[in-house]
Each structure stands twice: as structure tokens, then as C-alpha cells.
Length: 471
Image (spheres, rainbow, N blue to C red):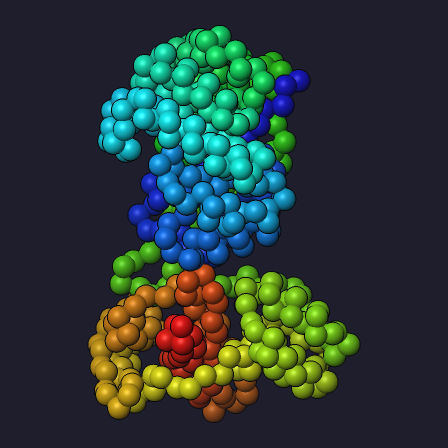
């Protein structure tokens, strides 16, 4: 049986699949899930200028075992930065995306055919300098001039590409046509027999999976797809194809089909969920808690390892403070879980001078009125006030704070728990904000859980502001 390789481009195409950008946590969850169901490769989008994109790639590279591909445009000058962001992956790869049809070369790169060939050669060579495995993706190949397409592929192979993807970006071909197209390209470019060949087919005519299968019969090694419907064949379609027709077609995959359907449904809901522009909550409240537990016998290395798993990047001084606080708690308890460790980090690490202080707040909420928050903060002796409405009192309060500071930070996690019992019980709130890819946590305690939440947000915010203004 021929083993068909399945490359997932969900992360690469995510900006086209949903209205709002994926958060750091969402990207990580998608990558982990794809790795678990054993896709053969995961593609990441080109990195932007933000440091968060590079940190996101580095984090994903540290947790996946599949081939991890970072993409670069043919005219981009970010090859070195892109490579640095994934070089720690077990199987890193760079993919040069280049349009080859006349209309896309002019529109996307402002290049004529000869100049485009020079760009392809130079970019592939530069990628090959850093990475052993380099892919070349011929975008909009089915609308390219046949001779130029073959020239572009040959140029990329000569420059060092050992993988090639032929893209029917417009989705204009039927299965038989696309199969014949792939066969013709292989005949005109004999060097393709020595490289891995993939196809990326638009599902514009609902024929994507059929075209991909036709290409497999003509010599393609694998197909590119997405988790949910985003204009390409989906993982579920590939899995169903192999289950129903795999034996007859003599093809198989490495996919864990029993896990795939459930995982695909979860990720599809994530991708289809859009965040309201009027809400600070990116992905809701995190209820998924790791089962890692620690005891007083654990060393500082053990504790810091778990702290890093939680997403924190602390200095040596803060690591020592966290471990000291952990020891004080551990001697009184049989174990310390990740919730307690989160709270320890929030209260012990990165203690900074107060930039924003809570002056006053008024929260109105009920089952027949819209939740509103009237918050006044103090900074450098100036009173800063904002009023906001939200889906609930905490949502409204956080939005009012965002309006005051004029910035939206990704809300990575929000937890509430009781500290004491009884009618006058104290409530503890933990807020984890992510700025430039780095995690900051704040803790707040009060008999008023909304007040505790506001204090926790301000605590995390002050840490961000202090670090940003220190550099």
C-alpha cells in the first residue's frame, strides 16, 4: 500500500478561516491536537514583525513531534528570523511560497517572470543555507503558463528544494483534469522524481478531495488539508476516504482515525468561534487544569520545570522566590497542584512598583439589565475613568480597564476560587495576561469576587507596564 502523507495547513490559513486572529493559546492547542492525531506535517504562517509571532513558533516547536514547517514569501527578508523561530523543532522545515501565474506575480510580488525566477532561486538557496529540508510551493500553478511553471519548479529544485507543492489555488479543475495536469508537469520536469511532491487543491467546486486522489494516482506523495472547511479538503474527508476506499485505492495514512473525528470537531468549534470586539475574553475561562502535583520533596528544578510548562518565563531571582514560597506552602499540605502554583507565581514573582492603582469602581449587573462597569484608576496622580458594558460584570470591568489603558492584552486564563468559608468568605481571582508572547499573572483577594478580579487584572497589568517601560 502507498502511504499518503497528510500535511495540515490550518494554522497557515487561519486568518482566512475566521474573522479574528488566533490567540497564542489557540495556536498551541491546534498544534498539539494535530500532533496527537499524527498528521505528517504542520505548517505555520509567515511570521510578522511582532515578537509574539516568533515566540509562538518557538513554543509550538518545543511541543510537537511532527514535521513543523514555517513559511516564507518569495520576496521576504525574514528567512533567518523564521528559521530561528523553529530551529528547535524535532523536524524543522522551511517552505518558500511563490506565485507563478502572471496575475498573481504582478499583484502579490510586482515581478515579471524572469525576476520571479531570480527571487525563487535566491530565496530557496537562502533557506537551504539554514535548513536541510526546504519546500517550494507554486501558488496558482493551474493558471500559470506551462513552460514558466516547469521553469520555476526546476529552478527551485536546482537551488536546493527537496519538496515541491503544486497548488490549484483557484480550484478551476476537475479530478481528471488535475490528474492529467500533475502528470504533465512530472513529465516535463524529470527532477521531480527525486523530490517529494504534494498537492494543495482549492475546494471551490467541492472537488478538492477527488482532485487530490487523482494527483496521488499520477505520482503525488501527499495532500494538504485543513481541520475544518476553509476552502480545502478537510482531515475528516481524508480519513473517511481512507476508511471507505483505502483498500480499493491501495492507500493508507498515519492518521489516528479513532481520535481524529472528536479532535476535528473540537478544533472546528474553536475555529468557528469569533470573539466579540467588545469583549476582553479571547477564549473564555480556562477550565483545563494540568494534573501535575508537587510535594515538599521536589527540588527547585522540578518546580521550575512545571512553572515553565504553565507558560511562565521567569528570571533566576523570581524562580528562587517562587520556590521559597512553594516550600512554605508544601510543608503545610500533602501536595501542591497547578492552581496553587499559579497563585504562588502571581504573588511571589516579579513584584514591581505600582503604576496603576484602583481609585474606585461601581458595577451594575442583574438578570434584566446589561452589566456595566464604572472604573476609575490612578496613575502618576492623574485620575483615569471609563464606563463600559459587557456580557457580565467581570467582562464589563475588564473592558473598562482596557479602555483606560488604551490596549487589549490577550487574556490567557481567568480563575476564581474561595479562600475561606462562610458568608464572609474571601475569594481569590487569578488573571493571566499575555503580552508580546510572554505570560504575566496577577492575584487578587477580596470578599467581593468582582473586586478580586479587578485587583488581579491590575496586578498583572502593572507587571507588563513595568517591564515594557524598563526597556
